[in-house]
Image (cartoon, rainbow, N blue to C red):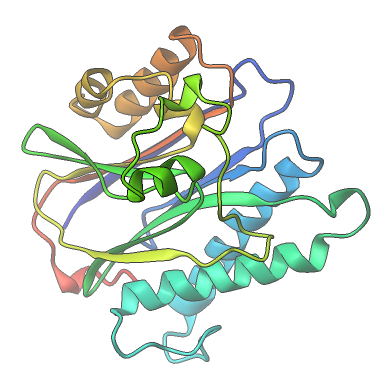
Length: 256
């Protein structure tokens, strides 16, 4: 399998960028984190999450038989267990630092890992993962938000930007509701994945995202996505990570 990937972030129309991301194709790991908006320490929180994921993945790659940070679940794939462990470490790191002016910090998170048994996604909050397959764009995550809870109850809430509770999330790392949603994914040649913060997807429609992800390279796709979100009037921080699966999956690649 050949993976092509890229990431880009922009402060948008905010004073500070509370988004963070990592692109680690050698580990098959990709993460986007969005520090809780308006909270002191949002920048610290998102960076803390990304660092926890990358450091643990590096450690596991160096010692595949080492002790896992979280007890393995036999019903989950290795990739799902990896993301569960990384999320637990990120949660622990945030809780340890929530003192003083950082006492209210928190972060959303979406992560994707490509491994020997396939792929997996984990997310907390309203950062998302999308997949473009055969020209069709599909969200692979469902927000942990008041909006989604209303929808699950059979109600049809107004669009996020037109609702007083549109941006209220129900889970975030650093809080007492930080359980991730984990999902195993099947990889196919030609798949394009996009991890992003809400500042990216909120100003953009499906057609714009689809067209951007159809660009020849992941770097060009990121540039178009971030620029388009800003030009569409996006006021929040804007972050996109794009991962392209250019050939069939092969377990011999030696990723995590």
